[in-house]
Length: 217
Image: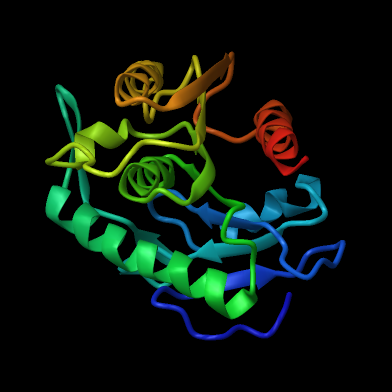
């Protein structure tokens, strides 16, 4: 783990295992109630040339437990705090810009991957910027549930949506809705589902790694 400069959001950073002058950047976004250390567990499985930056969500629930926005369960599914999500998106995009500049990564090869609530935020990033090469939404809330307006920027870059058929936290219907809505917005979306719950297993990591490797060639 490298020395940590200041970004808009607290973070952890891992240097590329293969050094290059302008490495690609992968931004990791954790789920509700977690922190920036959580998704670093998958880093050993990811491509060697990546600079990895794992961000901490801005709203603290308790020490070591953070959220991108408030959620409440209801009979119609999760109710998301749209205002908090939009505030989080602003500082998230600021942090991505700062990471590209401070870490000297290739601005043409920025990737964002998020799990659960972080998956929704990854989708919002893809919808709000034109410089993201690829986005991965793992067991994510449908990002269209947490944005009041459709994007006005051109939709480019590729998206991978991965979901568990047995997910009892964010049902697989959210994965289907994300896939369909993002395709309607013009994104090239790949969709994969596995017979798992609300988790990241080796199959999900394999899908993520394959998606990244195809776009790093």
